[in-house]
Length: 460
Image 1: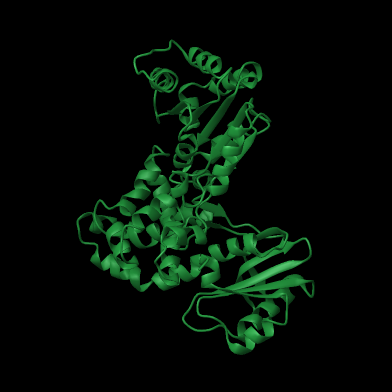
Image 2: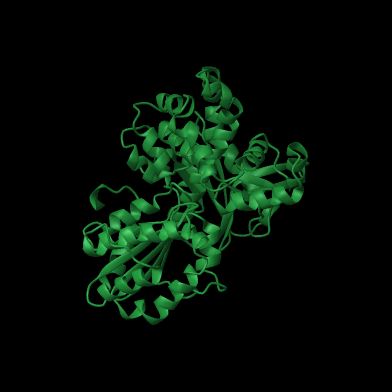
């Protein structure tokens, strides 16, 4: 299975190294739903002995105990009919087996278990401190709720604080990993697939089964019952009891209404409820509060950080009833007309990630900002802005069908002067269609000017 994995190679290597240490290991794995946590754990535990238990949402303590009993019986003894009276008995049996044998004990969706059994975190802390630490056990806790993992497992206030030996947070696929998943697709189609799925491996798996991106968008977003048409609602129902509140807020955000007070006025929800809901959505990596970068920019309002949800709430959700009734062709055509603009906006995320990971600079902060331009007397946006340990970085993304020329570099220099004066700055420009000869020649003699192509972003 390891040979078939796309992405997650470094994470799998860390798990393998922990396994080979021979010591007790306590590993925390987390990331949003559909990101591939269970797949990673399955890849790790292949060929190894141990217990894998996936807690169920809304399960009672009795239900969770019965299911964990079954998992322990199968993992430790290869049987199904062994019933444990309590969690303590399961932990004792696992610890006894792990005294002389390398075993894993993986609890997936740990937040569900802790909702059913509030003392579970304290119980795990007791076993780690007094029993598990003297065994050859690899304990893995995995969860989709970033807020729960960071506050109840990893924070200073948690009984488990300071005990984990590895902490793995899974992020969406990079543009290069998306390209690995779609090896025969061209750059533009890769850009569309990457932005419409947000680089989520599970969503990409649906796109990958089609021969063209147009067919994929039509069949996965605009047909009743299709995977990415139903996914947003399923995702929300897996987290929230009252999904309509969150849906109405995301719909307003998609329409360009990005301030709490304005969203409150449009939805009829109180500003307190809107703020709470947005914070909760932020913990799922769907939205984020617009922040300043290194003290620059206005830092006002909220924005989508997940491009799948941004696309869905802008181009699919308004026509949900029509699509559900098999009348989604007009909505599909409308989305396709606006697709280039949507991709041009969201490819900036891949651009910033590329600069962060591939530039070789020691970057302290990176993002995109709005700022007041006193020369033009208007607000402007910088696609890429950040601070390094040696100065600053500034960049522009041009995902269009013509080469980029000196005008873009001149624009960046003007914005640099407004934002940081004449301090040391590196310039980054991404172009889908290459660069003019004079800009390419100039950049070749200036180490602070970095020209990046679509092929660079997708590793082609």
